[in-house]
Image (cartoon, rainbow, N blue to C red):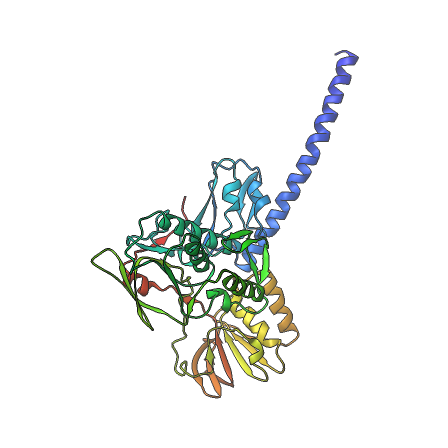
Length: 437
């Protein structure tokens, strides 16, 4: 081989080495970070999604990493062995950016897992249920992100607005619920000059009002009819509620608060009679935006009817110098316990039926461990409440007991029950979705 050939070969080797060594180093770093993220997800229980999450089709992914780059959450997806893989799917809150960013359509958002199903009302692409004229938007349909809820409300009403209007004495739309999806539906009804009513059993904001104080709510920019563009990506719960109140005031929207729907009955002329705790409405279309919170799940123990038992925490500062037991082990229970522990002279305990927290956010885990270390909160592991008395509470730990401790407040955060009975009474079918390709 000539000296010129050797020089060319050497240059080629240098070029290839200078290009590929950094690539290999970067690849190994990405793999290490993904492995650590997967270990954290297993430790924190974030590998088991409770609702909407990404599913990657192994044979289709080409490993561009686009899905990882656009995800605003931490470690939902990571590259493992050259392909995207869900690492902490429990963190997913349904942005859908990963699905749209994939150049080969290797990702889809699904509900549940292959083993664990999620109950979801049967909904068509236009958000209409199996009952013609009844629509579902927002969290109840599985999409809890504020931007998604606003978009669903808009799309649903735009479809209804194209239909022929009903008789003058009949509403075009009756909206049940005024969280993000219900508010969007109402504003879009107003924009399209439809005859409509908006009912909310509590107050404007829906489920968000029951978030703990100063909870950060994730969203994306959204256009609000009659108000303008909301450009924030993170906002505190209190700021969001204040913003919704401002939107309602500026747009002149009327919301019938403290009015709950009891029954939806089809009529012979293709409309619906909607009976509430105050009156009856006749409407051509019903849009349900009532959320998945439904009715708070209860403990079903003696004494649970006592006034000291609460299922939400709107104002932690209302509880001071109290002996408080928080029941539950999810993020809501942890956040409530921390908020209550911040109030003057409170003694806060957490009763959790397992021996370790699972599927809570890492930041909440850090905060509760710090609070326990500082003796602001005590955790009663592997315990179950057996009886609630006016000045005490009785619990067991599965081996010993019963134990009775002095108590002023019981805060129950053990989840909510899907309003299945109400939906089925309306004729809406409920399907169990499994996260399979």
